[in-house]
Image 1 (cartoon, rainbow, N blue to C red):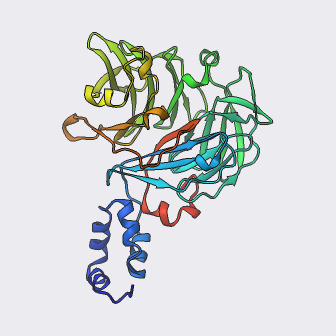
Image 2 (image 1 turned 90 degrees about the vertical axis):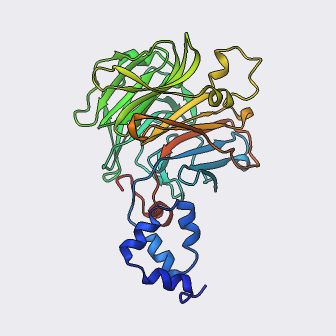
Image 3 (image 1 turned 90 degrees about the horizontal axis):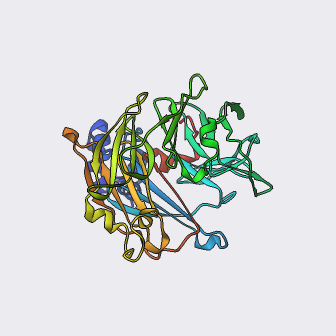
Length: 374
């Protein structure tokens, strides 16, 4: 399309600041479509400054025996729609996602931007791990790797070490730090969740309800404390708007419910901030009438960041139904809503990698230049 078309002329006539303000209000999928109108539109849109946005939900479905069946999806809360993403070629099946990146953790550690895969190998990690906890330091070139299952030659190595390893992408070097406290080491890694909040990396174990944090400044662990809301069955720890938020299933006098609590750093005191409406909760289960009451909730998972907490069912037979809670609503209120169904056709997977991440238009047009400290 010619750059002299009426749309381009009208856009060119607007003040640049006004144009950027208007475009910054649009969802990223709309901006991508509008960038194809003309070279002028693409230039303006691709030059938009990074802006704060509600976190997207990413789902990467992995099939162990046939990569043809792998699929990846992203939910944009602003347009309230799922996008089907091209599934990237993978260095391995051991993936973790965080802060606009995918990480392959074993047998070699590497990372890549989410939207435009460009895998970068790091120097050899001291202890290769499958399914570790991972966090990217805020405004830094570093990431932290905690625990996980040992890997030797691609096979599981059963040991009781829970190393803490910090990677500096500027120096391409790994540093070994004090390991996870002893209280966590006898528990299965599947029971651990983590959150990075105000330069502390928190680890929570739902089986024991133990919680401890690693300081990114002093490289030391805090004392182990207990975080156990009444009736808790299982939960996941998240960092939302610089606050710790615990989301999990409860069985109380009110029956089964999925609750959100704000957790005070230091004291670990908690206060309830939201309860999922019953209709939404049972809408996530789908055809579970014959299962035991407690067991049918076990495939629910919770991930959160910024102002949003997503809850979904990671059982492939349920087609991954999901809902979201906006905890950033004015007057301290929270707002729940269901998410639309994932796009069809939808495959079944052996593993589902899920995480939240904010995105900006620069991640679409300049993701090849993305760095951990960007």
